[in-house]
Image 1 (spheres, one colour):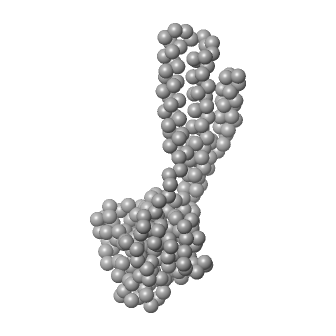
Image 2 (cartoon, one colour; image 1 turned 30 degrees about the vertical axis):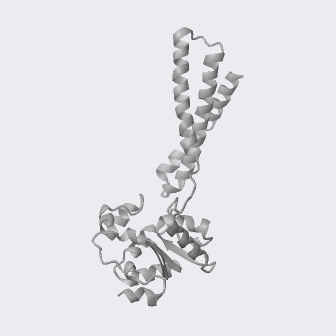
Image 3 (spheres, one colour; image 1 turned 180 degrees about the horizontal axis):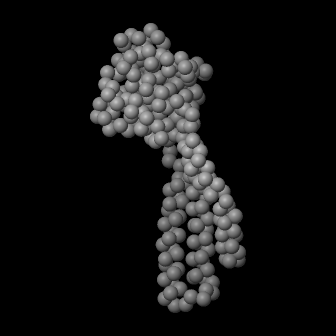
Length: 245
């Protein structure tokens, strides 16, 4: 029975080996590599589960079965397999654990306000806030911080966020039909900007190049229609945008 489990696990692993190899080839040649990250994560979960199954069955075979190994070698191998399996189990549990989403009070206020906006509203802004707006507010966002689309205009957004005049912001809003911007004023802290960590690659290097040398940002000077802690909601309206100039 134990051998059957081992053979089944190995058979599944090797039969699916073509899949990982194909994904690796696609990853090397596709222009949108970020789109494959969730697939690799899922593959890692599956492979980890297989190794946990194999480790558990091997340990059972070493302790209960009748392996050719005897004495101290047998129990030493059992101890090694047990340690490795327990480690894999802990990793597997951590990977599968779903951390509860617990927004701060300021974030909850933003989500509640955005939920009161018209249903066809489209927003853009701080990536962390954007990730949860579809869930909590049931409104559309241009892109999320978590696994954005490969064609998402992320660099263009940060170019507008850190614009020194209102026109680039208005052009961006009109091009992508944005109704509201949701800003985190902490994103405009000079020390944080100097660190150059705006997003993650492959976008961050381009964003850093665009923002480099700018300091007199127009968006923090505008009158928001809603405020909650460090967060500001600004309407993409010419009268509001140009009021800061």
